[in-house]
Amino acid sequence: MPAEVAATPLVFEAIGTRWQIDSTDPIGASLARAILDRISGFDRTWSRFRSDSVVADIAREAGSQDLGVDSPPLFALYARLADATDGAVSPFVGNALNHLGYDASYSMRERDEPRAGAPDWESTARLEGTVLHTTAPVTIDIGAAGKGYLVDLVAGLLTEAGHTGFTVDASGDIAHRGAPIRVALEHPYDPTRAIGVVTLTGGALCASATNRRAWGDGLHHVIDGRTGSPIEDIVATWALAADTATADGVATALFFSPSADLAVSFAAEGVRVFSDGRIERSPGFGGELFR
Amino acid sequence: MQIRSRQNVAAALAGIAMVGTLAGCSGAGSASTAPQESPSGSDGNAAEQPSTGTEYQDGEYTAVGSYISPGGPESVTVTLTLQDNTVTALEVTGSGGTPNAKKFQGEFIDGIDEVVVGRNIDELNVSKVSGSSLTSGGFNEGLDQIRDDAS
Image (tube, rainbow over all chains, first blue to last red; front, side):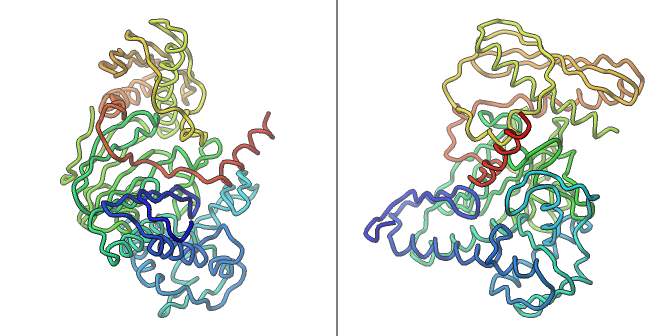
């Protein structure tokens, strides 16, 4: 990006998806650079799709690795998500995803060996400060909440720079400040349609669905950490929360736990769509659903 | 086995969109097909589909989805009414050949129209759409590769 350019919206690709940042004020070149640098640094630590990441080191051999300042809040959120889903949500599902073919080389082919769940958290890994100690090689995948967490970091940079009305949209995970916006909830079977509309007045809305990151018969990216198998009976979820990390994590947890339970545990409202077409929403979910 | 049946109903629902597309191309007011293919969105190409511009003719459309249950072949017939590019009515009838199928199909049919009467995003006056993440170039190339290998 040329140094003198001030732009909104700011559109770019990062961490394997499309980002768009809209603000009521121009986003200056130095802020844009700070945003891209923060995302790039996060990716360099946490991506399981690049061989030079800290996560790649942890996947290669057991030992102790510094995962940086983002690791305590991320692992704390994952611990709560694991509690709320009886272990279905885990930060250690990387090997299970690799097994199904969603690996660093995008082989898209399931391996011949039997599927296995994520390794047991307690016996495999322990976070001390920002250092993760592991007793065996383990592939971290923070797909359940990492993108939402990163959206919060970007929103923080915008706020620090004085922006008060903006939307950070990391392709389905949205942080919003300022005047309310209407957001369509994309139909999981037809991207030209919506199943509802949510009015977002500050805070975060995150979506998860099994329709795009899918690569074969029953193979997609939302898997049960206890079994290593993709989820079959839920096809799309949305969560509203004050922060995007929580909304992202709850959107994943909704594949395993009822929206009413998660609403209490996380102060987040949710809606989920079953494969047979039914909708379940938490009592406080304020959006409009078409039916 | 209930989950397996649900998946097939999901495929049948996706077939509604397929029928709409087929009928929109041919201009026919009625069409019938057996939607055996996977939902259009599940192959990773959803983001590439045009989101506007396709006009569907008003009318009644019917699709039959068939599946093999543990008790033998079953089918679900879906009839929908389209007006101004919006689904205004939906009727789902199961063949219900076995007692189990009757029960399962009853469960599906009760809830279906709670979600499938979607609305065109173009007409909703929204500034954002929230759905699954668009995929990266690497992911899409991986999909292209396995498609090439399969053909």
